[in-house]
Length: 422
Picture (cartoon, rainbow, N blue to C red):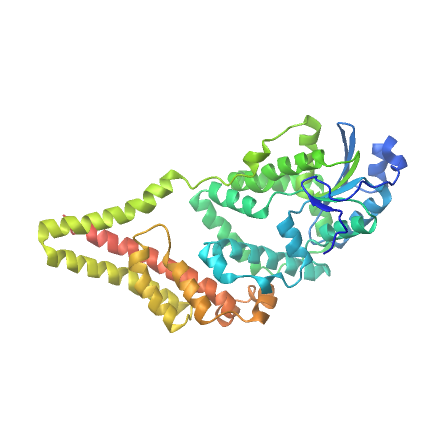
């Protein structure tokens, strides 16, 4: 969307400052809250008046509230809880059609893409119940500000950084719980009303939900909530102008307000950094092939070349067969099945690439997704049979099942080879 020179990121303005006079409510912050409702909070800090508007991302009432606040207060700047990537995704209806799926697979970002698809599907289904698109209140904020010639800041952290920090900081068993929850959510048919969303925006309820998330998944809460509270608060604080309207999710309002009041200044460079993979995983990743190859060499030394050959053949079969069966279970193309059998014995000996990456890439080449499948993917993921019928979703199955088969084969084959030493 063209932003007439007023759309910017991180508090840096590309257009001029609004010449609109400040609202009379500058002198009466409590009155401003009364003018709207409990979803609007006001903070005065560093000579600025910051109006925090807490929203639900699939609420028509939230979109209407955003319009009333921006038009009623005529701020110097509007900050929204979006980064440029999410803004682009929301403002372009057919964004999935331009996706380079092969590039995503090569960059080993298929799991991240799947998580984004599941979240987008859940929000879209919830929004369909209420007759409103997900994220409409954020787009509304940008478009109303643009119409009023008010500069806009996209103040959230890059979603890719947030996802990777959340994933890498979450323990393995909690990752499994998270993935299971995401999959279960897409098949949940519970109806949600605007009244229920209004209750969920209640500050006490939001605080309870955030606290519960902190107990169940503390590292996830840190990356998704706490760090972004700090990031958003600093970007809002740095925004040019003395009167700022900030449109954020209701779950962030309390954390942002507290950081603004305390004038808590985070290390922004640190918040933008993706933490490296734990050295433990690197040792495990390279330790497995060293153990397997070392064991084969030792078997050859102790028991002769024929024994080493037999164990090597067992390794190939133990890895190749389960991975190929996984590809068959995914109803993948015969070439993908062959690739699974041939790749698994070798990819299991390196942490650089997995069998699932190879099979997904082959599947994407031999049976590329259709354009209409990108258009309907948000609905397709909610129907179990479509995972096998859709070429697009079948690529995810061709990644997951061969990966699982290869993992099983590594365990079986490795156990057999090591046991042959004794």
